Image (cartoon, rainbow, N blue to C red):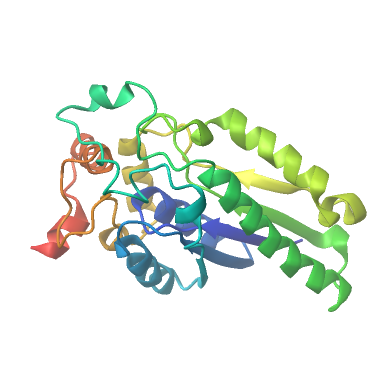
Length: 245
């Protein structure tokens, strides 16, 4: 069997760990990174370093138009919406924060699948590979343990969109190749993700999680707090912070 996959690589801790896992499993893997009008380009820049460190092919896709469509988010319009900060993690559980980008994961998955399907259809119809020997997977890094409450990070969302993608794809309907949405860290705590990433030697020192784009992480946004909590509970220093010293 020959496996094809894409991994959504944001440049953060979770997606880097998942991409490192995918790199060990998939024969033909592409890391997809979306530049969607984020308030800073730190993660995108880090993703390039991460893909290089992992030896994975990467495509950075310009989705800057998204800020004009899914504009109701502090990640895309910090002048209109103040990025959430928290003095303690429980306070982040009070509803869906304004860092949520409307239907971001739905859009990302549709684009990722279009790219992956194009790649596999080319190999079947142009290169002559037998469809019965091919495996198709999309790797993502959502999490429902230490996360901010985004509705498109839940297991039921990924189960549903997997069915929808397969219902609407030529790959599934003509060649009976079912694409799997792989979410290996969805039920792991941030501590467990840190331990896993360290175990498989993912380049965690290159990752960036902060919502803000300063020289150093702000240590105030919920993403920074969850990350710090994970390393603290794992009894480890954050290698990305050590590299900044």
